Length: 292
Ligand code: A2P
Image (cartoon, rainbow, N blue to C red):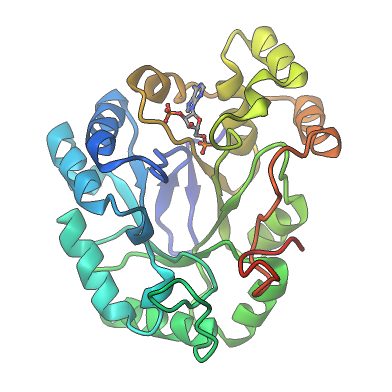
């Protein structure tokens, strides 16, 4: 298992970080504090999670110096027409002078009432992010994307001056996306796995294959699921929890054999429990991500 992944900027990104999607303002400050005190050095948030202020407070409460922490946040869909103001708002909410990584949350411009903003092209948003990155290296150490499919990455790479450092996507044994992961890594784009446990009330935690490997390695099923992503070259992983014991437990990573990795990947063929909307390919009929 790698401890960190080297980004195409040269920076090291710690292999596991605390996810904070759906972490409520009341709970997330403590979660971040507990995680950093336990040894996490990587925290992921987003303007859309409406918890950046509390994440910032948790960082302060931990006493861990800012420069020891890899901090990611994301540009919200309705802010794609004005990324600079959104960046300033995120820095202010997090009370930090810089971000280690700033991601475009979805390649999906939206209006403030949550509808598709079809008059704005997400590739132009990338152009704006590149300009901000080039103009403000003191504020942005890296830029990247999230929820981007291979089809959309092809479009992005055709126009990009700055290759995204990261593509953050949903990855767990019911959504392996191996082809996309390999494509990203081949282009120098690291991949970050969100929802590695399969999100809330995940059946993966009681999946027989996962339980068998957990017993074999003497760890919890969650550890196997986080370790699966950490065992993939070029991949970092964000288990989310607001429960202190789980936050601490989720740090325990184990080496898996290639055979074990394949056994876990095979779960996808039998256990599709979550609508697999892994990576954006356009405005689908439901207005959100379509499968590839
Ligand atoms: P909670 O935050 O209440 O502790 P994912 O990272 O795939 O999005 O999964 C997050 C979900 O998994 C949350 O509901 C979280 O609950 C739960 N969770 C996090 N860590 C563990 C664990 N070690 N064991 C069981 N459930 C966990």
